[in-house]
Image 1 (cartoon, rainbow over the protein chains, first blue to last red):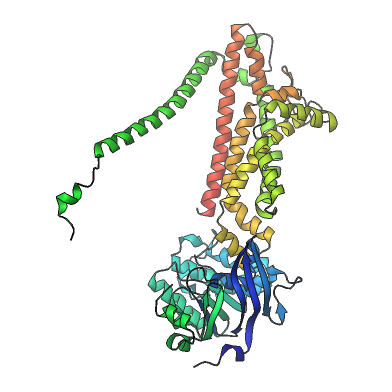
Image 2 (tube, each protein chain N blue to C red; image 1 turned 120 degrees about the vertical axis):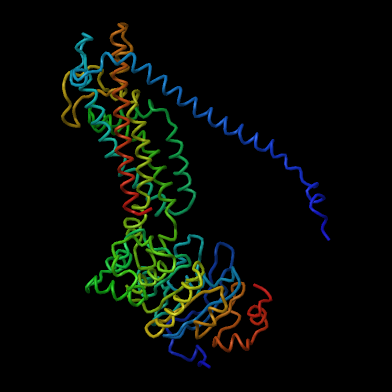
Length: 256
Length: 297
């Protein structure tokens, strides 16, 4: 069994974090710590606030005009919601992979190179593109067709390309919002294997509605219900011996 | 226990024949609608062709207008129309797309934005003569452009601007938000997202709006008369500050004359105007298709 998440070196932690959409209180005063170089899964029924919580970590909620965030998200000793923090810089350091593969309608190469160019990457562009594609386990499939359009790839390949795109700008944390929910089982298992490989270099937070997936890929699991953090702890323990009744009801499929 | 097949069927009355007849009727109505527009257009074209065919010649295109019908041509009017179209496009594209980007990507969602939005839609319905009066006051007199191509083009640009803005807004709004998120997600600023991702994807739609706008501008007469386009021009315009005429004004002038010969000339000029319009639309569609295939959509 893993050490409780709060006792590990933390990559990111939240303190009394709330999110409001207009009058709806979508995330309710959540405090948790994401341990470095571990995989943390957020699970819970639809609308429980797990994606909203995830999107707080790289200030993606800024893009939704009606959303309002209260509380703190601390990353490297800084509150990401402090007034002097630039969300653009945050998003380079904390990358994101989305639910539906969303490659740019450009070439495979350009998909990776875009983030490097806009962030003033000073190394060798070609090498970094290759390294990112290798890290996302898609290099062998695309190395001979880097100038082809990314939209010609299969869904699973597109999603791995999106992971490569996120890795290219060398983030410390990778946020994954149901990254396999639009993929078939084979593509899904490749993404899951990839998450396992990436763990040594990155801290990963993954939102999933698939409990088996959470159990397979994560070290720690947080269960959310109607905006509240019900239970958070070692994945194996949470799935075999949940402390809260709600958690048990959810993981045994009695609601959701 | 459910009843056997026939008993279950008895509870439905499919009336298939009637449903299919309704479908066919609707199809016929739709076909009739398109037939009306096509027949009208064909009649118009045939009429113009019959009246104007005798007058269409190389000389007609390259000669200056004249009181003598056999020597009259539309050289200044064609060149004036081309000048005006290019200038209108150059003016209305940056302002229109700029306004659309601001309204869609930057403007806070509030009452003021809504008010501006409503007003742009209303401006699209203002009679063109009103723009002519505005152009006369502002461009001809206040800015001192005089009765020039520039004054005329600026006036027409104002006239089509609402349509350009609305079309560009629609195109920008149709860009999926997942694409914006992808770009923001790797640390792009708003401007980088707009320039590298939103605009290229929206461009075919924006160009479609431009096509429609220019097609409207090419036929406008009233506002240009207002800003002082001439009915008789005996020289070739060479700069935006020159006096000018355009095809619709030339046509208007000829149709107003009593002699039948001039009506033929007008028909020939209309044919030229239509061809010009067709060429312009074709160019824009080619441009749009090239954009689309390049983006892979």
